[in-house]
Image 1: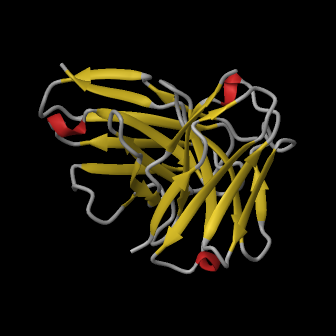
Image 2: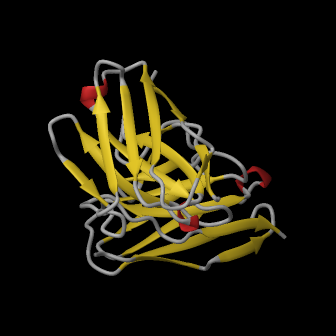
Length: 107
Length: 117
């Protein structure tokens, strides 16, 4: 099965900073990758699908890129409401594995 | 608007069977792939499996021998049945689907299940 890894596992940044999270698949998954945001105590929300397509209603400061095995989620200007754990997930074939998550907080 | 609501026992004894239900409203249950996802306390998300009305079903290999996901169209419900539970199955269980895009864009609120004697 394809394994998903994320780096870093956690980060702390200042409001307004550019933040980048990396997700890597152990085998190529084309662009069949989604990113989710989960705020503490809340249900996960999809931010991006097809590696780079912004889901409806998601702020434009979020963007995604990549294809094959290496993907990134970028927050162009970190806001206080972006404090959350971010997960990537592959969905080309089962199992639809999630990455281990990256916890983002404000410095 | 598709809405999902999970329900089930909050406490299950070790070695017993966990049964959960996801009630679907606002859409045709036969139109979607239905997944169950869980999250142990303080840990990440784990996809458990999916079911589609056309018979397409798949499970996480780590749970395949213990898990059944099914759909009852008459009740508009998606069910999860996990046998021989242990403390490692303690988690919040979510049902979710891809309604308008790839990725899981519709989730239930989740239901917490604790496995303990």
